[in-house]
Every structure is written in C-alpha cells, then in structure tokens.
Length: 89
Image (tube, rainbow, N blue to C red; front, side, top):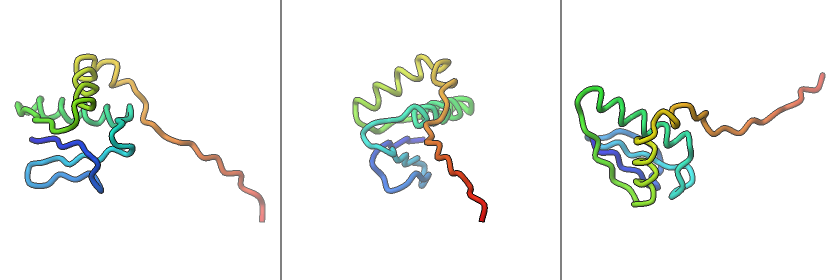
C-alpha cells in the first residue's frame, strides 16, 4: 500500500492509498509517528511493503522510528487535558 503523508484535509484510505493528514504539517507528532509505525508493521505482518510518499524530513523521522520501534511503541498519544469544574445549579 502507498502511504501518502501530507497536508490533506483528512485521513482516509482510498484506491490503495492511505492519505495520512498531519495535524501540524510538516511537523509529525509522537502519536502520529506511532500510528505510522503501527501501520507499517501491520502491512509487513501480512507480507506487504509500504511505499511512503512524503517530505524528506518526515521520512527521516519515520525511518528513525521504524529502526527504534520499541521506543515509539511506548509513546503516549499527544493529548490536551481540559479540566472543567462543575458548579452546582
């Protein structure tokens, strides 16, 4: 499958291409990197190769993450925690 990482409007798989939208293109977050590595491993487990189409800087991050996947797998997703204090009505 082709993994196309760019500034798409949304993430979708269509016609054998996984269009992966980065939330802060061209920066790739730790959780996005984890998703990409997980996808590559999934494809590999079924004997398929993944062709990656993206900028060189992003590809370098992905190659590094794949080479050190044990580190990436333990990354927690990037989330913002908003605390709301409920007031009695």
